[in-house]
Every structure is written in structure tokens, then in C-alpha cells.
Image 1 (cartoon, helix red, strand yellow):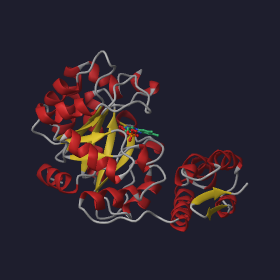
Image 2: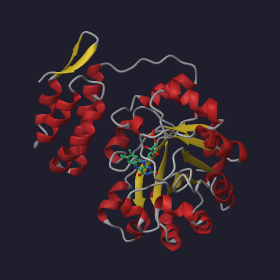
Image 3: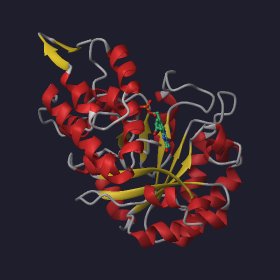
Length: 329
Ligand SMILES: Cc1cc2nc3c(=O)[nH]c(=O)nc-3n(C[C@H](O)[C@H](O)[C@H](O)COP(=O)(O)O)c2cc1C
């Protein structure tokens, strides 16, 4: 994919989907593809593990077919590995690459990866240069405001990353020490979008089409990226696309949620086998029914599930009761 085409579609559709470790795996990307987003990206994949062809990491890199463009997110801090991994994923057929500069998980930051890259601007740029020199596809970065509230450097770093070869940046509007629940700083995203000629993608706290519309307006970003709003909610794709293009949008009914959840289970089972599918469903299923009354009980019950065949029985207990969705105990 050419950079000019990537930017054209980004600006036209204004929506990119997020990398979500443990969630945007191949089975969920197959589901997402049916909702026709312009772009779909993998969860983060470790560059060294790609170069070493680690089996689980290579599983992350299976491409979900569809009309969308496929992205892959690389995490790493050694330019040589990042460049080599970039070549490998380009050969696999990915259309664009994203570099993780925002992950705060300890196992990532202790290796100088993820948000730690924001601390050393020169090193972050070396990584971008190593990746952009290795491939022809567009390269983007996903970063936070800074590693902590005392070291906000997203505005200065962004320009350097673009100069090093990145075509666009996603800004998660929180700093590295902040929990996901904390406020998103739209002002700093706006400052970055104003300072840069390259397109900025705003991320953080987007759960609805209206959130997307508001954040675009308040930040002047070119596009949005929801995060947790995508968990158990592929309908956020048509919701955002329809609202931004001034079309109407109808929320899914309970039966549609159950159908997609069961399809998700089927794909997980096919891809990972029954044991891993059940383990994954324990965290995924409650997201599909997050507005359900007695969600706590549903979350508890799903932890007891040991076989795939128990899950449809659990879903039967979720019903509409007047205006509410109820989990019958
Ligand atoms: C379960 C989970 C997994 C995530 N995995 C990744 C990841 O692999 N790469 C990444 O750059 N960000 C990852 N993120 C961060 C999200 O992409 C997003 O930046 C963050 O959730 C903020 O958006 P939100 O406030 O709308 O959730 C993850 C977040 C969550 C909750």
C-alpha cells in the first residue's frame, strides 16, 4: 500500500481500529472484517520473536481476509530486529506497520520497549528509520503524551518521528503512569495535531460514534481510534463510520450480540482449540453483554465454564426484560 493511499483513506474514513493485546487476534479480526472497517490491525507482536519465528507470535500474524487494509503492530527496541521483523511482515502481505511506543506493561517497558521509547527520542527515531528503510509500506507510530506527567514530550517527539519516516501518528491522550480510567488530555492531542502537517489519529476514551465526532472536533485530529470500546463491540465500527458520514445508525439487538458472540467462540475454537478458546472466552464474553443487569454474576459464572458447549447455555440465560437486558441467575 502506498503512503499516499493510506493517508487518503485515513482522512476520508477517519477511523482506524486499535491493537488490543489478547483481543484483536485472528478470530476477532475475522469478525471485525465483516463490519467493514477501512483498516484492521493485529495486537502487538514482538519483533525479536518474529525474527525467531516463534510459533505463538507467528499465530498473531495470520491475515484476516476482507476489503480492509491490514496493519501489524511491532513492539521492540533493537533497530536491527525491528527492521528484520518489518521485512518479514511486509512479505506476509501486511499493508502498513505500526510501532508501539505506548505500552506500559512491565514486561515490555523493562526491555526498553513500548512507552520507554519515548524517553530517548533519538533512539525512537532510529527505530522508525530502521523500519521505514526496511519496507515500502507506510509506517505509523502509536504513542502516549509522555512516559509520565512530568515528562510530556509528545509534541516535540512527534515531529522527529515524522522526519524519521513515519507517515502518521496515533496519540493516546494519557501519559505513561496513568491508568486507563483517567482523563484523556485533548488539549495536548490538539497541540500535536496543530503543530504537525502529518495526520494525527486521536485515541483514548472513545466508546461511541458521538465520542468520535466530539474528539475529532475538539482536537482537529484527522481520524480516531477507539480502544476498549471495541471489546465485545464490533458494532462500534458501523456506529462511528455512520455517524461521521451523517448516516443513521441502529444499535444491535440482543440476539445479534448472542449470534456474534457464538460465532466468535466458533472461530476461537477453530483457531486455538477448545481449551484456549474457553480460557479466552472467559474474558471476552462479558464485554459483549457489558450493559447487562447482573453482569457481575455473569462474569463469575463464565469463570466456571470448562467446555465450549457450556457457553451457549450461559447465553440462553441472558434475556431481554422490558427495557433491560437481564442475566437470569
Ligand atoms: C486489553 C488491552 C490491550 C491493549 N493492547 C495494546 C497493544 O497491543 N498495542 C497498543 O499500542 N496498545 C494497546 N492497548 C491500548 C489501546 O490500544 C488504547 O490505546 C487504550 O485502550 C486507550 O483507549 P481507550 O481509553 O479508548 O481504551 C491495549 C489496551 C487494552 C485495554
